[in-house]
Each structure stands twice: as structure tokens, then as C-alpha cells.
Amino acid sequence: MPYVQADNSGGLEKKITVHTLQQMRGREKFVMVSLYDAPMAAMAQKCSVEAVLIGDSLGMTVLGYDSVIPVTMEQMIYHVEAVARGNNKSLIIGDLPFMTYATPEQALSNATRIMQAGAHMVKIEGGAWLADTVRMLSDRGIPVCAHIGLTPQSVHKFGGFRVQGRDQERADTLLSDAKCLNRAGADLLLIECVPAWLGTAITQASDIPVVGIGAGSDTDAQVLVINDILGLTPQPPKFSKNFLEETGNIPGAMQKYRDDVKAGVFPSEVHTFS
Ligand code: KIV
Image (tube, rainbow, N blue to C red; front, side, top):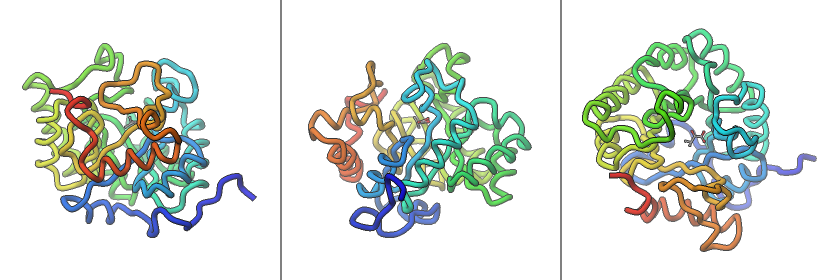
């Protein structure tokens, strides 16, 4: 018998799909957690977290690298399989790691492996240059989450983990990237570390759900990394919050994060960039 079994005693009742998230848009915020293993995935299901991401942040949070760049397809597949074993209700999104989607053909072949490991959607980082890739995957039935803004796989190009879009030129590029990826067939857009006004502008310009992390409170959904929720990050980013501090236990911390996003209490001004 597996260590963790997905169960139906509380938590999400129905399976969450891209259609569910689209339906929630404008009615109710949805919640995403980036996590990496079966017990946390099962807890997310019990806490009614609609989407779980197996982020390549696992390179830094679990595997001890100082960036996401060393993460391999094999590591991603191992963790996607673990999460899928622990949760049979949330939408499961798997990251494609660094340089595994440099061409549309490479993206198709690697996205196939992530989907076969148990994901329902793949996430890729980049702007308008990814439009052909998004179209290629989407046309073949692979849902895509397009990640823009601070894209950690490009950390060396950015010269560090910096807020993106504070200057008008970069903000305009991000807005037009969002529109382009939306038109190309992306099902979700994820924006990281941008001023709140830009998070609002991108959300208003999109007709797909927009998930924010450090992008203000107006996006359709929020995502946080489990290590940040549980206070395990030595130098936590401004946009994150340690929910364990106020709840004192792990399920309580995940539940509080979820409830605060739903209530529009998180993120607040102190977690937001201007
Ligand atoms: O890898 C990850 O966990 C992510 C989130 C920070 C959005 O990309």
C-alpha cells in the first residue's frame, strides 16, 4: 500500500480541470502551491488547493542547488510522479526545466514525458518567442501555463532575482508577451515579481486565468512555494509569507494560506511591489 493515498475525506470533492479554473475566473480566486512530494500533495487536496505545481524551484528548495538551472527532466519526472500519487483532485502542473523546450520539437517531446508522469499541464518560461511552442503543444492537446516576468531560468540574463517591468519599456514588453501567449493558446498565465499595477493590467488584458506571485492582489489566483509557506526559506522573498508562524502546524499553515487568498487578505501591501 502506498505511504500516502489520495482520499475523499474532506477537501476537494471534484477533479479540477482547466475548465474549472476558467469558470472560476472573475468569480472566485483560486489557489496554487508549488510542492514536490506525495504527503504535501495529499495535504493540498485536503486543504482544497485547486492547483499544484511541481516547480523546478525544487532544485533550490529540495536539492540544494543555488539556481534552478541544474534541474533535469529525470528529477522533474520523479517528483511529478510522487505528487500525482498523493493527489487525485487538484490540477497538476509540471515545469519543463532549463533548456528542455528550446525548440518546439524539443518541447513536445519533453512535455509528453511530463504529461505521462501524471501532469495535466506543463509550465514553460518565456515571452513572445514561445508562441510557436505554445501553439505546437496546445494544438496537440497539451495544456500550457506560460510563465512571464521574473523567470528564474533566466536569472543570469537578468543579473539576479530582480523585480521586472518597473520601467515602461519592459512593462510594455511583458504586456505584449502576455497577449501573444494568450493568443497562441496558453491556458494559464503565471506572472512573477512585477509591480502590482502591471499585474492588474496583464490580468485585465487576458482572457485566460492569470496566476500571480509577487504580482499584487488583482490576479485571478496566487501561487506560493511550500517552503516559503512553512518558513523554511533562509531569506524569504518579500512576496512570500510564513503561515506556519501564526498557525503552529503544517496543515493549518496550508489551510490559512488558501483561506487568506480566497478572502483577498493575502497578498497584502507588504507583499507587493510598486
Ligand atoms: O518553480 C516554481 O516553483 C515556480 C513558482 C515560483 C511559480 O515557478
